[in-house]
Figure (cartoon, rainbow, N blue to C red):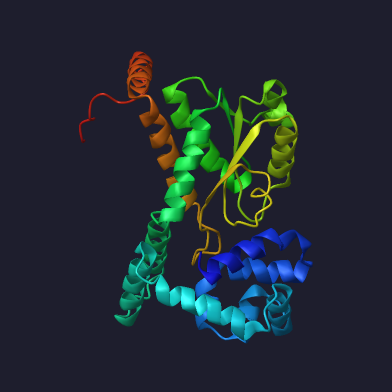
Length: 295
């Protein structure tokens, strides 16, 4: 384990013991290690929305003499790990910027490419596989995503309904979405999708399910997300965007991958379920079977 990995684990382990300001600084360090390695302390503090002195206090809280040592560890890790998928895509983004590609759409799409490439890194792939294994072992999979995360939860549930009857989407009129958990047991798993700002209702239902013995797995944006402490398995999705709104593209990609991994677990059963779904949808004339003529 490199010093940077050890420091990262220490930050996560001690996160709950930090003051609110230190937590804010630590979260930025965890989510932007390259900035810590390359940018001045004042600039890092500005981006983290804390005072520069808070960055020094964070370093000392972690047992380091000062911020310079914190920065040095991140710089060493960056020098050792610059050849990953995301690094290569970032290089292309920088090259594009030098050629004058400042168009908003181009920047956003190149940023999404870098984020999706990051999901291909070994740690992310390990998390995806472990989460899929946990979901596969469940009797039922309850799915929860509120507000912006609802789209990801619905996508996962929709695909899973084509594969069988194991998925239960926790939504309902009049605040009844969580009622399905009444019958949830320790044989079941709750998949929660939530990113900052975290929906209070999602956190409360996750805590309730955990208290009932239901296994929790999550798709979230940080190792210090409130969901991370509740979850057996966590898949991390980047959410930063050049837009005013956070991006959900990586989270949707994770949903697609998890569905594919679950479908591949029992291919004959999956094929049978999809054939049954196709027959049903054809009977309902759900989709157009002929291309309309142009007028």
